Length: 175
Image (cartoon, rainbow, N blue to C red; front, side):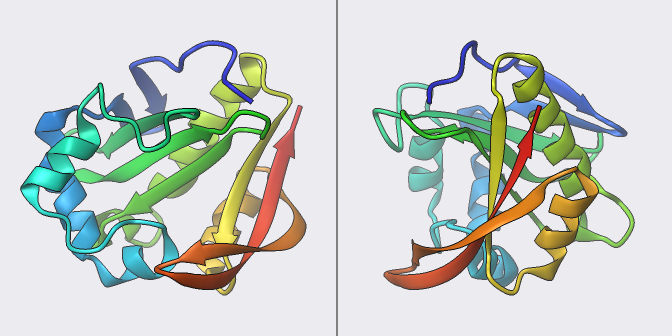
């Protein structure tokens, strides 16, 4: 389902700041597309170039014309740690996603959990009744994020990943 209102340009997430990504953030997109863990556990496109990363971030560019996608840069004020976002496909509940560079995945930092909580809380406070996380089977770190942020396991599903099927788990948080 489309979002009732557009998410804000910035959200606080504990010591982290989430801000809407712009074309000038292309280097982070390239770095994420080169990270083996990001490629293993997310739908990130591998080996992006500056050109493809810039195109992905242009405000007029749309990954899926019928869906709302909001991408946020996660920063600690000095270092860009990764991205988090919301994907809202018509007829479906909004889905939170994230991808962190190795520097953002440090133990105990909590960037993924705090970004997930900030985006989820915003959605639930602004008209969404349900929010989902879809996690690739075996990604225990993301399952821990789901549990820490109040999500509960709902079901198993299959998704297309790098040209083939992969098993996923679907988690939900409701009002």
